[in-house]
Length: 360
Image (cartoon, rainbow, N blue to C red):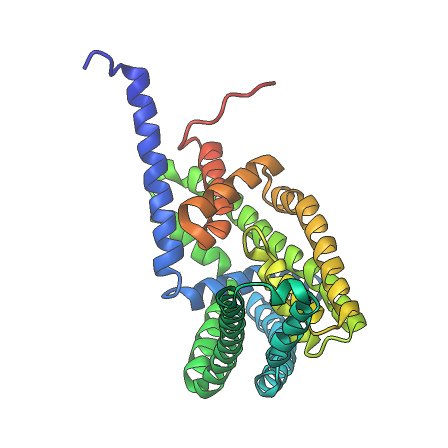
């Protein structure tokens, strides 16, 4: 064991610490998040309304409890109105979408027409090849149609489930809003209580980690929302110009698909272009492809900068952690990767983990 000198021990200890921290964070984010979701959302709401609360206290000399109540009420009206409007529009569009023939029945005849244009070449193929090609096309198109129908029905069922579970949703909403009020009103008291439970030498480190982590996580969420919003406002006008029905629902679906690896919005745009092409809607097909190219170029250019800029990491570091997160944890890792990077940076700044050597 002579090789296990102090340097090796320090490295091994650091690796164990990092692994344990990442494992705990992964457990918290993937297993325990749903249990504490109302209180985490309440904490986020309290953070959002903190500036209005402080403004009401200073300008109108209101007690903090009254300022918190007023700010929370305004937030409820604005957020509730926006969510209600979007939910209604989406519900109506998805409901109509389930009744509409998406054009899959017209695709096979169009493909058959294209094949028939081959004339003698197609007629000269062995019957087994022709049967195999047509059978495969029917199977692929049937699977695509079933998948699309299943996806739309799943979304509709989820929205109906929200409507039918109003008592439970109302309970969660009340708990979240009441918790947000107390988080906001008693911010200083809660902070003092939490810090008083920590060992004395942990106090300053915990405060530093909390400030850095909270700022970075808020920045990360802001970056994700910015990315989705940019994609949405690129897609929605394009869909409207192309005359796409249910443009709001499809624009939101395309924007959310921006989180998917490799294809991203192409998950919606590329199949849409193919369907329009086969149906003879060449203008819409070309429009979908142009939208895909625009969104892809913009996304690749701004994603590392927006995410990195909002969480204080170099764009290359952000990109590396996004990739590693995806490779290790799959789709969830796209979100968890930068979160791990944020946590490691905060722990290094607090002196709990060794910092990288400076090149300056």
